[in-house]
Image (cartoon, rainbow, N blue to C red):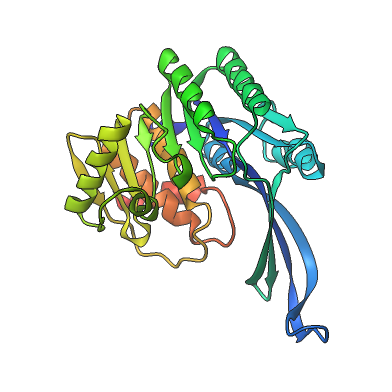
Length: 324
């Protein structure tokens, strides 16, 4: 069985902030007479899954089964997400919880002549209220009781879904059932993920959250991983370092894994891809070096394409052969 085949047929629960990435694309030929701004003649509109939903896309692209769970608005965007975008992407909407008081997050990017000119965000970022948290946790427990979940990914974009109460309850349920857990954190609840198996921040997030200076060197990153492990009791620390690759530490060993040079088009969504493939590799029981190699290749690959896109398994397989 090949390495990529070992990532297949695992059910993964993804809990976090779901959003729609909307792209309005057109051409620019003149400046508006009303204000010194370009006029974009719209030619197309495309809605893509973003945030935690992009993690689900990556899990599916790698041959496994994503079970997406989040709270979205009972609005037009939320209905569009549930009834059209998720089904068209082959992802079940059974884990969606609707709120009457929140908007579904929509990030609208306006592109003129293939350049992003403006982004408009429609969202609510306050924490879920008590009823919404209760409804979400009930849905999560239902999914864990009825589906053969092998891993849980907590994908945090600081949009209010992953509150401290939700985080701790989900991790508690996972520990009781022996389910692997992984988190892509953000600053607000950075230290709430006690006992998580894989903790995967990027270098900026670590620098913003730890009380000492961190450099992208093995010694400095090892110190950061030790500090995180002392506070979180996590099993693995993976710190992504952009073009410098990634750092992986399991307490007994720590390594820096360089990435291959690429022509970068857009780094959006790379973290979603890395947490997806690293989690599946953990479920498959692959060695640390293989986990790091897969994460580097997959995360780098999606940066070569504009917008938020999932990993391409065919390209990944070819690059993996070259890497060997």
